Image (cartoon, rainbow, N blue to C red):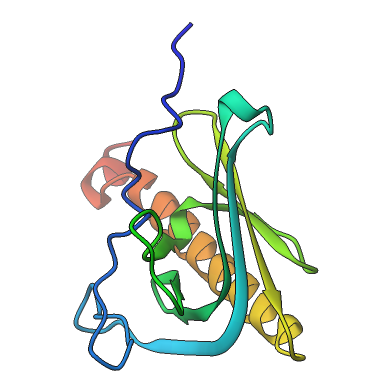
Length: 158
């Protein structure tokens, strides 16, 4: 049985580049910010909760963004260990309407992301997030079904 190294560097932690005005640089020419809000709390737990098998990242104040490709969080005060977080929609497994979403880490390991809002932005954030995840999933399903269709010449031969 292989064990996961919870203490390693994850690609989705501390790898987002921001402008001087704290706007995330796009990963693609057509990436657009669909939603953002400030004064947001962030908590990410990777592992099962046992101290030796769990890693946590947290911030009590920051900004969250939803683009047409990913979710991004930037703490107001960066530290050596936590400077930013991003996750693409293909890595989001499920979205809870109230306060969290689960992400795929490696193989069968899952992390939970909790984002808290001081104001009434919670319902808007989770509606936009759920909509983008569903849109991404439906695009992925359409591409899969198109990929499995036989070629025109193969259909004629049958």
